Length: 192
Length: 192
DNA sequence: CTTGATTCTTGCTCTAGAACAATACTTTGT
DNA sequence: ACAAAGTATTGTTCTAGAGCAAGAATCAAG
Image: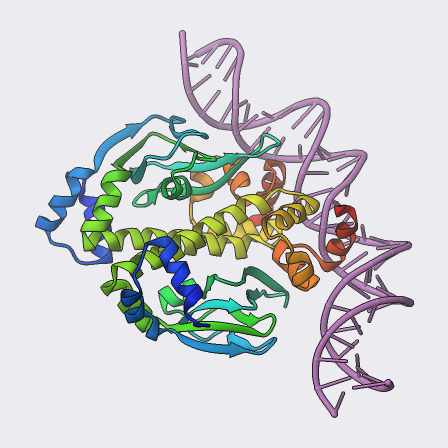
């Protein structure tokens, strides 16, 4: 099966695109695999690409002064993921991007990407959508995770990303929610 | 003095624009004033416009289930502000937008705005910049305000928005930082 | 200028969740 | 299949910051 199929559907859902048009864009995306725990981007590097997940998952996280990992986003199937801040500003990344599991993905270099944004109306819309979604997701997160009790955060996560609790290791979930793994472990029993 | 001057400078900083070109865009922006505490947008309404602050300030906030105000953003001079989520999705706003002080601003209706985004390359860039900034700001906020002690949050705010502590009422600062006014009051003495 | 209404400060108590510690359970590589 | 490392659970203690209460200061409207 065509490795570009998911990407085609993703774009086509945003703005209908015909096969010919799509075939002009798709060669800019390169198929790659990452092993479990493999780093896609390390802190200090400038983010050079945008990734589209076909199978598996990435996590985006930072390590704060006290040495703790803070996860900001899980990129699952059919999602774009990158470090937008580093990509846009050309600044060194404060984040790591790491494959959680064995992951298959498409990679597009930022120069190709931004060339397409400027030249292809379809692509301009794709970028707009990535930005809009990134923003909306992050807003929801700010509002949801602020002032909620740890249990309510967990319930929210469970509803919003069904099945994530079994798929992603607990310590990562805890880090995403901003609670300790101990607290999470205790709360999981209260969930049912 | 020309009421569009600040807007001109804002856009010109992003992508150089000549006066003629600017004068085609500017009539879409309408000068308005809001009194202290006046609402620009209420929860439940669909956000119809984007605002550019000339003088004064808006706050964007939500009221959660327990009746507490949660402020997400202060729009000060020379900043665009709107409820992007409602604007993009056309969904009812979960937020209020309210003038904190007597405020002068420019307003552009969303249909005009998005028409310009599609037809003017300058404007497309302006929108991109608004989205990018909104995203970057919100990311910084997530990382900064998560896992930091209340005192460190306050120090960060003070550095990042110098003078805001004297200009904006304390209870709003507390709400922005996600701490109680009581805690904020105690911390302010520890600041020096 | 006065008065009522917010807003801010400060003291005291209480609690959700962090920190630490020890044990049990899973993975992963050889 | 086994050892070693990583991950999750559970009990106990401790603390930052919430909640409540009461007084002081500031503000805004007639």
